[in-house]
Length: 215
Image (cartoon, rainbow, N blue to C red; front, side, top):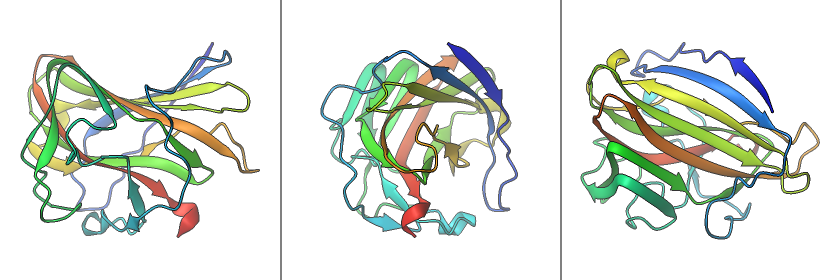
């Protein structure tokens, strides 16, 4: 297995509340499965919107399956102290009627349903409520698998609770690994959220993917 470090730039538009993120790209040459339980969601037409426009991001995004947690834990696999709870991110980017979010406290992990992504569907963005507890962190893994070759790649991101103000804010765009090259094709994406460091309570809501190739 080869491991490559890459830097995450935090040069964000003025209205984005920056959080400290470090990332590492891990490439696996074995046929390790990146697919969570259930059938991967296909690369079908997506409902898109400029959901991060108020933070200087005019890109279109589509929601992960049940990315706003309005259907409870459907399309997510929750472990430890991971729970869907009442209370939405305050910006209501998914709609004014949204009422739920994901709470991760103590030791907790949440894994998304695997979805199909293509060339250009290359980043993830979401809302996180920072507990502002020194030493606490939220780890995000974006894992892709090329179903034709079996190759797997993971980009890991750590959000440091001490590096941003308390409360809800959008993350910067988080890069999805690319095992496709420029010739097209499809790959399977799974997201995993894990708490770490000092025990604290994090909240996650409205998880989106950026399909710039469809703009």
